Amino acid sequence: MSNIYERFGVCPIINASGPSTRLSGAIMAPEVAAAMAAASQQCVDIAELQAAACVQIARHTGAEAGYVTSGAAAGLLLATAACVTGLDPSKMNRLPDTKGMKNRVVMARSHRNFYDHAVRSVGIELVEVGIADRYSGAGVRDAEPWEYTAAIDDNTAAVFYVAYAHTQPDLVAVVEVAHAAGVPVIVDAAGQLPPASNLKRFIAEGADLVCFSGGKTIAGPQASGILAGRRHLIEAAALQHLDLDILWEQWSPPAGLINKSNLPGAPHHGIGRPCKVGKEEIVGLLTALELFVAEGDAARFARWLAHMEALVKATGSIDGAVVELRHDPKRAAIPAVHVHLDEDVIGKSALDVVRELQDGSPGIAANPTYHRDGVVAFGPLCLKKGEAELVGQRLRQVLNAV
Image (tube, rainbow, N blue to C red):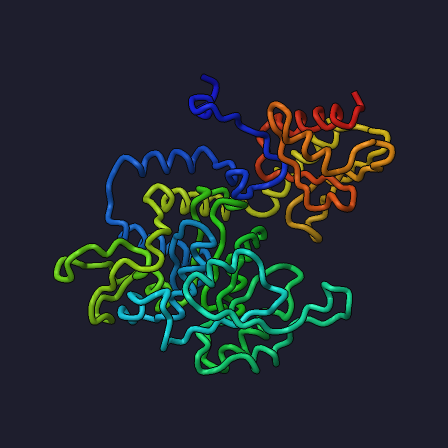
């Protein structure tokens, strides 16, 4: 048996697209896999392990506290729940029934995406502000700080901000408006690594809670994420996530994570309980985070660039195709290869090419994001040694260049 998946009749793919959940996330370093295997062989108190993780995440993010989640979307759910309930166990027990609570979350219309389902699942009312004329082509404007001010009221639990390079308005301005009204700001930074400096950037700009994916560029377990922020909010998130099937008199949570004296009693299993994260994921995420920070952006970029250069070399020259290596670290933190097709010459659309690569043996995942522009894109994050050359060779076959 050449790989574990053959046992189950599943064929591994070459992932030249990127570490999406649909494609099973990143390739973990051997050290991460070994740490997870070692963690699996002993039992620990999960709250104690999360308290240790709190210290490590705080050190790397500059936040007051941190927590390991089962992914960035789980972090969004826990962050929202923490802002709605605070440290009130009776409110925690009622979610997603938010009647009588601060249950409105304000966000820019241009920040909306399917991942905000995790925010809405807490039972809040999502309040959109702004009109993104710059996306529709009708103008240049987007949401502006004064629109947040107008939308925030006494029932606002949080402002939700999705961080991208093109996001408007800037986070500092949104934080200023929200904090003036005493409202916390949640930042979805799931895919905002690298650069590694972004681990600290959003907290430094005033965010109260920040969510990162653990299974993408950090290359930790796919079912892992980071929630970092204010200590009392991390405490509220932990209370709504942990297994609390324990007698009050017996329960002694680590004070670095949960201060029992703040509570009149322990809540029941919370709204985050389905988002369980195991000891293996916690240890794996912490190990991957250490490796990510230690490698540094320059070395990581060089490693990724080598894959993309190998892909370009293996693809060679093809009539009807222009192979572009995009590798300016000042413009993009991750190098890429874009293959621009003259679809009349090739006789196939970019989407046809993506599908042929996908349906071959082994399947090769390419990025279809730009297919409407006649572009097939490739990324380096999930490629192993020798795979870039295989992608280039297959691409030549699909484009009838062999």
